Amino acid sequence: MRLRPNRRTLVVWSTRGGPDRYGLPWFTQVPRRRIRRCIRTGALLTVIGLMRLARAVQADWRLMAGGVLTAVGVMLRSGPLSVVMIPGLLLLVVALLAPPSPKPARTRRAQLERELGAYSTPGERRDLEAILDLYPDGATYELRDILARQVARRG
Image 1 (cartoon, rainbow, N blue to C red):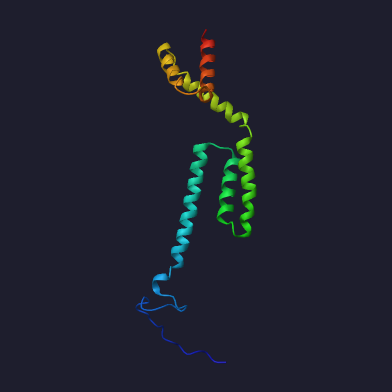
Image 2: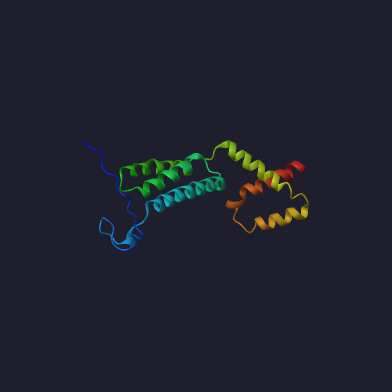
C-alpha cells in the first residue's frame, strides 16, 4: 500500500451559485451554527423567565415543577417524552388545591401587619378603610382582620 499523493486544496470562492449536494437551493440552507445558537439562546431565555416567574409568584416547588413538566409534555406531545405531562398536571392540581404551607403564610401575614402598622393616625385609618370599602369583603377580609386586631391592641 502506498501513500496518497499530496493534493492541492481547492478553494471555492462562492457557494451561493447553485444547489448543495442534496439538490436544495442556497436560500433553503440554514447553517447549523445558527440553529444551535438559537436553541441555546431560547433555552437560556426560558430559564431566565422561569426564574423571574418563580421569584415574582413566590410559589412553592410543586407549582413551578408542574408548570415546567406540563410545558415540556405539550411541546413534546408526539414523542415518548409526552408522558411527563401527566405528572406535571398532577403537580399543578395538587399545588392549586393544597392549602399554603404555614411558614410562608405566617411570614406574609407578619409583613402585611408591619406595612399596615404605618397607618397610625385616625385620618390615615379612615382613608384606608374607605379604600377597602370599594372592594368586596372576600378580597379584603385579611386586611380588615389585621386592622381590627391592631385597634384592639392599642385599646
